[in-house]
Length: 341
Ligand code: SAM
Image (cartoon, rainbow, N blue to C red; front, side, top):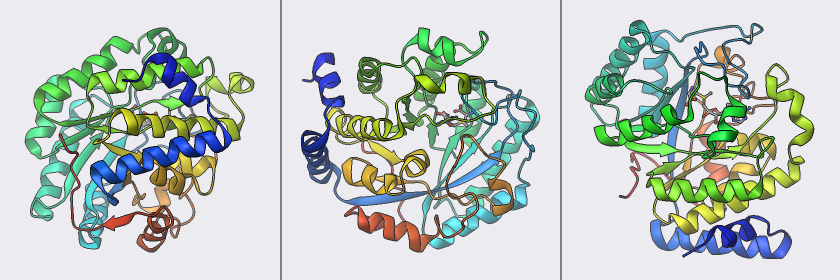
């Protein structure tokens, strides 16, 4: 049993001790869930957002963003590509909207993707905070997994990262709603935020463990000039330090939750060119190649230097296979790769 103190110490390891921690996590992963890596084709449905999170490039108040919503035809084409290429699953992610037009658009898209793929494609949604009724409509349409990061488990830090009407309690309650309905639930945090201590990251890892999530996506916080947090960039750890902390956090998470699905995030690949490989080696068993139509990728600009925006090759099946191979994993095709419960 790891205490808060143990975890904080593990997160602070560097050099050979950190390598040993990551090897231990790697061995745990192999023993508990094997070396398969599952693919989730990421479709960035829309960058229109009703929220105004202080860290996010597509926040409502960023007037420099060229707003788009994919057409149903574009989404179905991307999903069909994923299905035929053997991705097993897709993720529909978007800026957040609660209006009926958006809710029914998603509902219909989920139905159509299910129909088009003969139910073979696993559908994950990552569409933010919604009412229980909305979550249920999307579940009844065929979505089985939902990703909603808590971002931080500390309500006071959450309040510093969001406007007053974005409430930590509401976000946490959304995770309960999703669980009640029967989704596989994913959550996660950002690491290296201004005002965030290493001890806080340790608390976040315990929060994730205690909330019993099935999947985790956690990655580095990355700056964006057109957001309010930019002003505090001097308070965030240097890139190398943020990277080391992230890898240690992934390792500890794998030790705490040996059987869950963990994603190698795009943000890790942005922070360092081998970031996704190292995340996969250490703890992750899921990767999310971007399959958004190329002309819209530059507009889903959450943070600076985001990879896979101009380079179709970076997230091509060949390159993803190579990334997985370099990490010592085996690519899994034509399997949904649902989390083990
Ligand atoms: N609006 C939905 C939500 O909040 O769950 C889905 C889209 S949101 C853009 C997806 C994730 O992007 C967030 O959960 C957040 O962790 C991540 N994100 C946003 N801005 C970021 C940044 N500057 N650095 C790293 N991750 C960021």
